[in-house]
Image 1 (tube, rainbow, N blue to C red):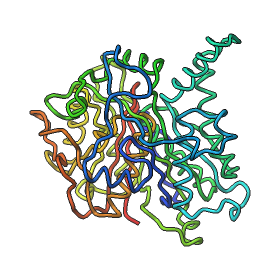
Image 2: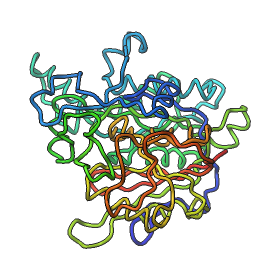
Image 3: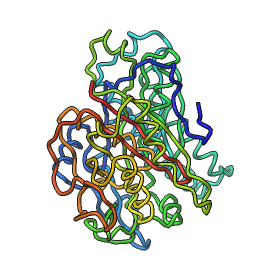
Image 4: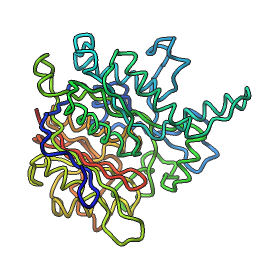
Length: 417
């Protein structure tokens, strides 16, 4: 339901507890959950000069690309002609998440398990391939909208088909916020009676068409130094580095997880989404309200939050807005804040789900991953940033934030099982 101010929150009467029972990761600093998590805790970055195409003539030349991915070795040959790079990464991440969860779809009722994912920038890469085919072979014109719609359908549909998941399916498109919004939509399906939803997002757009579109947004960093290009909350912040990848998560009803003895990483305790007011209206952005609504749904007070995984736009004005929202809720230096995406770049619809995975593993291992390359917050940003190295600490409750271009704000509260 929505509030009079337009914020999206959950109906109080819906009480089905949703827990995470599987994690699959494809990220620029690690392919596979444990490899990525080890690199993240060690502060190893996957940001480097673009290799997938020649970006030397573009103003921005850096990206986070998933290393060591051999599609032919990981994806059945029959699927290769039907899929693009992002869908192949999503299939690998989904396979890992399902394996970690111990899920056997054949043991579930026919329509009890489904797939709800997020996508955004990946449609550009799919469209790039379609345009190249048209240029080389001729054929019917395909609009950008048709390319994106087909990419989204393929991304979710291939996961469903490959694993026999015939329950609810869907794709959420809210840019960087999508990875959180998809998980919230998965929880809604659990509350409607589904037992398990494969969810999250894997996204990216490292191709000439996508690169041009991202540059047009005016937020890409043009610094060629991987250690200085993406510095959220820093006085030297000058934009962000894009990346590819994300996380696929298994969200399951608590009863179903208990019935099959599944390992539980954590619980999705609260969620809210808001929209920013019209530009130039003079009204406050919607992030603070999203945080407060998510905490309220979770029954969590600000002093109970152990860490915030920040959106970390890397754009000075957006960083100030986020710092102001955190200060209003938690007070100056009131909660540890981290942005491990400084090691991957911003992954669009994959970013929120990868931060959710990091929150779950922080709870598992009782440690906070670092924000790399940032020396200190900019003047006036009263944040307790986790800088330099991982910070061992007690972690039971994590807040994950994401903001999407166009005014999307999403907040999720994850708590220990």
